[in-house]
Image 1 (cartoon, rainbow, N blue to C red):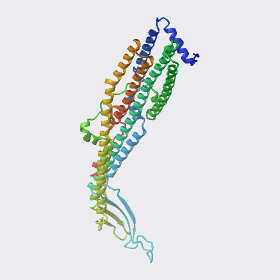
Image 2 (cartoon, rainbow, N blue to C red; image 1 turned 120 degrees about the vertical axis):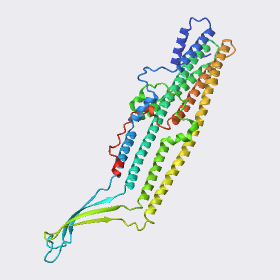
Image 3 (cartoon, rainbow, N blue to C red; image 1 turned 30 degrees about the vertical axis):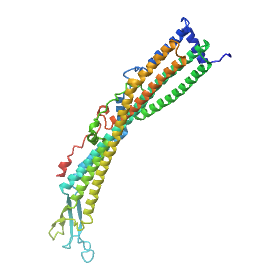
Image 4 (tube, helix red, strand yellow; image 1 turned 60 degrees about the horizontal axis):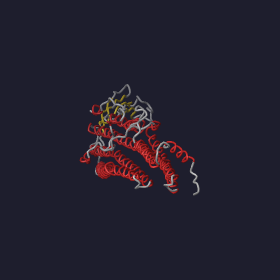
Length: 467
């Protein structure tokens, strides 16, 4: 038979293998030692690696806190709240008074032309006019902007929930990408041991050249998978860096518990009322209702009061005038009533939008809950049945091989099957973790939020200013 030229790396593995087992007495003992060593290496690779430093490990909660602190969108919402509260104070005040001054009845012809003192009707006047807006209207205007502030706070909560959820997804994507990298590294170690064993069996006349070539081909395929998984890990780091910056390069801490969520599925409808997006719709409905009450209040006109002091020539006495102005709402049917009808229609629109959002979110959450429960059941089956069965199959095949009732190829196939089952279990757990993140962060988690940085409400009291 023509001598087969193996790759240099495989030759080095064969040389090291022969040097390590030179003291063993039989070919079967050498193969047994080889497979046992490979199994121990695999177990070591499957075990989670401890962090190099507990202080530098990036936990999920730390990543979420950093993401919220780093977000400019949150500070933007804080400023919207401040703006609305400032407007609430302003809206509760009376309108600015109007200063009036001028000259009445100035002659433009005759002997007294342009004289401001010779004609008894000519007078210089100064006065002030104040619109007396009713307190009900001013309180409603204040409430309208207070509802705007509450809406901005609800939008801030929704934004924080989105940041925490997307950060959790990015963190979990990186965690499980690195976990799969570890499993693939185990497969690569197994494949190298298979090459060594296949070469040893081939040289001893117990194996074929096809087995050797198949082992080398399997290693090449695994290395290709490793390259793809390395790319996915790098992409996951970049996705995490979008939220937390350079800290995305830190080693990750332990994974969170993904078998429980923070709300009770039995009380889903009640708890979804606190969902940030639903809260935003509820605040919009309250704003529309306040505007409708304000439109109804506008059907009663506000009066204006004016006081004027007039000065005439030295030969005549000075005068004072007092007046009241009242808008004549002579066409309420086509003006004020129409405005009120429009505002009431907007209230119904906001209510319908909120109810539809509740239905959509309820259906979406129930679907995710069902998928999450199914995934946990499948994962439990992997841990309870499939992985132990794969291990037992490997042990049984190893015993059969030692007794001469199984071939090396069958033993290596059982070992690869065990690793494939573990990879499927890790992939399934990653899917469950993503569903957990989407469910657990429907509402913001106060435990991973930074201290509140919202500026305090202005000291002025809108209600006091409205009196």
